[in-house]
Length: 142
Image 1 (tube, one colour):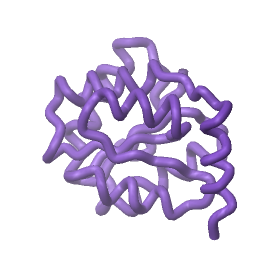
Image 2 (spheres, rainbow, N blue to C red; image 1 turned 120 degrees about the vertical axis):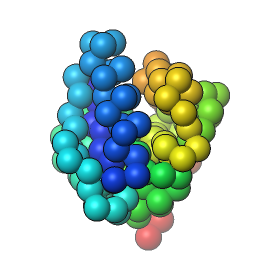
Image 3 (cartoon, rainbow, N blue to C red; image 1 turned 90 degrees about the vertical axis):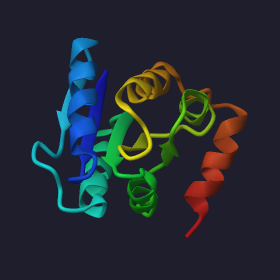
Image 4 (cartoon, helix red, strand yellow; image 1 turned 45 degrees about the vertical axis):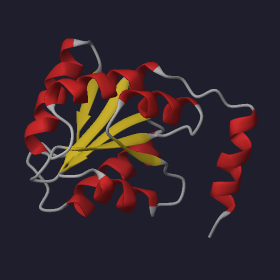
């Protein structure tokens, strides 16, 4: 599975640790920020564009709190990014909301919790069905 990752300067250390984790678990990692972006808007938009332009199903964004990356990414039509800090929501946002990306805050989530959140997100498959109705509604919004 291909996973796009990207970070600003505040999330960079955690991104590098998660990148190593992903590679150890045989994921193909596409890092759009080999050097940290100046701010979360830049890094999240790099991730978002890579996902949408290449049909990639999963991505992870990092900044200090996760909120900024999620907000910036969700401004782009067709993108669904969830800010997460625990495992259950990571699973459910992928399964019910079809999240194409998650955002993690290095100031909120530690290394071991980040690994667990990431794995729960990556293991979950989008269920479709009744959930697609809501995604269609989101897509129709201006």
